[in-house]
Image (cartoon, rainbow, N blue to C red; front, side):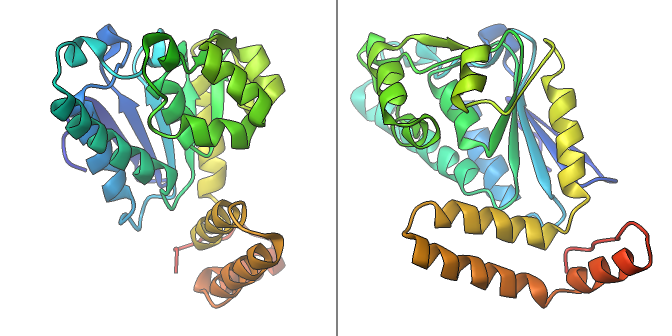
Length: 263
């Protein structure tokens, strides 16, 4: 992959896992324009990457996954410049949300404002025990602008999401886990390790089947049940005609691990 200004992107050739690390640790990985452009370019590329099977999305250092938008850069921005920057953030967020392969957020420390939104744009979250989540934009007269008002109610239910957004209060990791925001809590500093462990397990599975499952879940949740069942059957039929399905059945009967090729 191309070099980025504020991202570290690593690929493991053996297990098809891509690690994307926001890399501004001195600024708590706050997202400036350049990082927004990097995220947009990176996830846009992942939409066309046939070899990648899972993404682990994290932040450099132990203080923060991402503390949101870089308000120092934004200080004094004209309305026009602010809107132009936000279009970049919006497009990057949508690329993460609709990434065709699973995206696992590995969160250490603060995931606040846009940083919290980046985490919940992922498919699920693994968090260190010191992680803290929050969408405090309204306390600054701003608005959760890359999906928080839509994703948090879907994940947590509307009443809790409204409380968090309206008050701007922070949620510690234990509450986040109990509320369904976080899948796994691990010792501080171990979120990336745990996320990679899960990612490798996913990457061992049939990549077409995983992609179709993600697509069916994502779009099925956004429609009525009858339509969702039709979408699921279409995804099933797209999986059945693959070489990987034949390989999986052969491997089961031969009592060996399947060698999936994504075909």
